[in-house]
Length: 112
Image 1: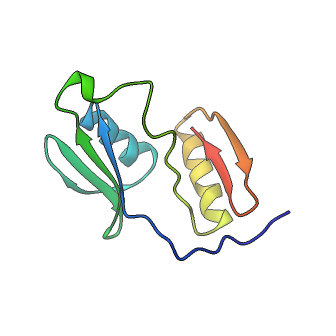
Image 2: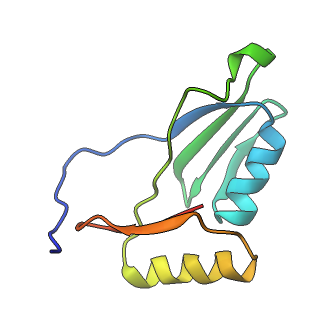
Image 3: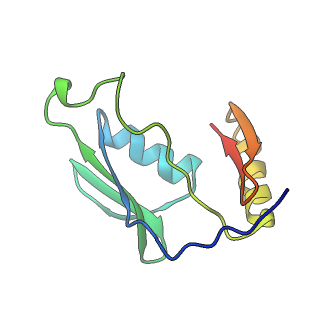
């Protein structure tokens, strides 16, 4: 059963502490397709147009980023089913393996 997702709540960009800001910037730019809005040696902000979606911050110490806790996943809601299909084709063209997919009723998802 499909139902509309209606919310007036929106999040600002996701701020992520990462082990390697360079490789994560490349992932969000080259694989996900976000634009680099600003970048330094220790931070990067990526998004679409002028809208920031992801803010990456290089962890200063190895202990600041751990593999057993943190953000489970980051979802980007696309405006149309066609946009989702375009992303799926882009990922397929790059031979990016998918973990799965789901229909949540209000949105359909693909997981990397």
